[in-house]
Length: 253
Ligand code: BTN
Figure (cartoon, rainbow, N blue to C red):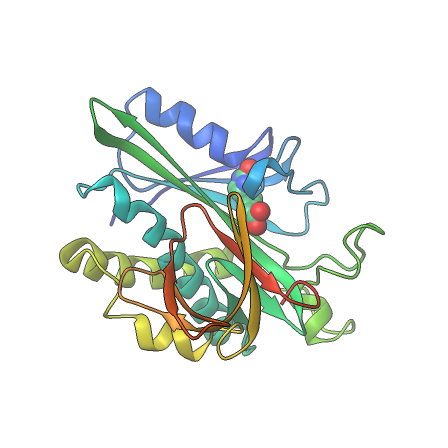
């Protein structure tokens, strides 16, 4: 992959900016990075606080040649890529909260928002947007209990983490996984690595399906990236990453 990285001081949302470039015909591999976002987007219409200039906010634009239903798998590919990059570059071991949050000490350090655009029934572009809390030391009252940063987890007196180097480490990991994924078009090749890092594994989760909530025990992902859960009546179900989220029965994980 040839990455074409555009670094901005401030933008509404790197996902939105990547989409603008996509609409103007930009090629696959475009990466928009911003120091700050004025309208950072989270999943489920939430916003993503991104004012501080201390964290990584970036979106990559891909033009994959695979069926639409494979797109949510890219989010899991990115989650594993960021995890591996943090392991190697920072020497820390984040866990993955299915499908795409990264967690340290039970708090969120990374979120991923994948947006797909179609034309004539085919994928026109996919924007994978990633926010990593890198050097932030103070969080708003609302986030304090739920979010942390790599720096806070390393210890306050540590040096700032080089965001640009971390970005390159993530891109390098993603490139390796994306190459295989594009060929095999399923996640069997990373199922084991992902499940080893899955915080939900063997834990009780609340499955939040549109119009249907139930409690179950998570077993791990399958080759489609679905979360396999065992319900209280013993039946096993695979939960699709595109529409469903899970949380711990007592809180976030
Ligand atoms: C989530 O809700 O967990 C997903 C958060 C995704 C945030 C990132 S920051 C860079 C990119 N641009 C956005 O507007 N959102 C994503």
